[in-house]
Length: 250
Image (cartoon, rainbow, N blue to C red; front, side, top):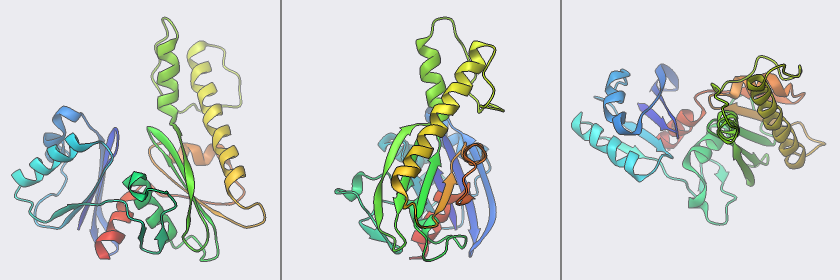
């Protein structure tokens, strides 16, 4: 089975053989050229069932469908957010308004072997946007937060400052004040992001219970290193793809 996670800027794909990862890959895509990029990236489209997650809009879904049809891929399906699925109950008043990537990430995180059955759960996706969702130990989604991701913060600020051109990146250190403007932007935005996550966790997770925090997305490893949480933390880059596998297996 092949799973394809189409985000706002990257595509991540995982081919599963039962419960094991057989092959995987990721690439930054151009909206005008996504169909050809799927082929050039070596995504094994033919001869298997395909499950997809798409948060990039209707146009991208149509382009991908056309690409799959062109490759004679007849057995493919786009996942959708549900009110309840795989032991997790959606906390949104209108369940379909919750992004399908967040939903699938929660499903996968809830079933990770690293999480004890009695543990509340926090799922943090560190991508173009930062999303943070909280679940109690029974699988009830308690809601979440959405904020700019690290690259988005850096780009937004640099665009507002005259004659400042930066290459967005995670800084090697945030503890040392910068001696130039570019590093000042990268380190300052990193501080804002990490500080915001810490406050969200403090406000959302029960202080008297040991919780499990699961991170995914392009900046997940850097955020995990920067937070240095005392609670159990898991970094899982293929979380949405694993959620797709759960949904496919019913």
